[in-house]
Image (cartoon, rainbow, N blue to C red; front, side, top):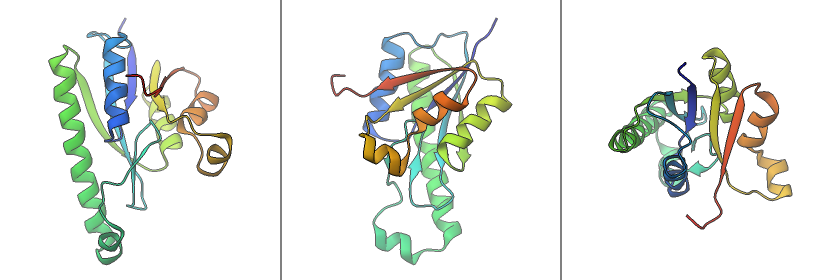
Length: 162
């Protein structure tokens, strides 16, 4: 039986390290049905993947303030797709086929909804290792998913040792 897996990506070095961890530790298999997702926030300021990391790919603050909202969203979505395609090719070079998906919304809720709608068996997310205070203010995508999903959630910690 094919296992459905959802992996998050957010266009950061930490996220790239997590992708390497997934392969090194055989967290996915060639026969899995894998979706590689990136979340584009509606505010067009950051791209957040399931790793909960902020990747300010939108550029300097002045650029954000001067452009039209749709232009900003279009640029972020284009860069997100390009980033995903590079990771799709990297996974393919390791013998793993993944389907890219650009999702929009709040990361935790969006990933939860996607996982439930697609009957995902395993969600793989990362952890920034936020302290208690930061976690209370900005939240933790991995914590949200662990507490709201019925399927298994694998949290890849970035211990700086990779």
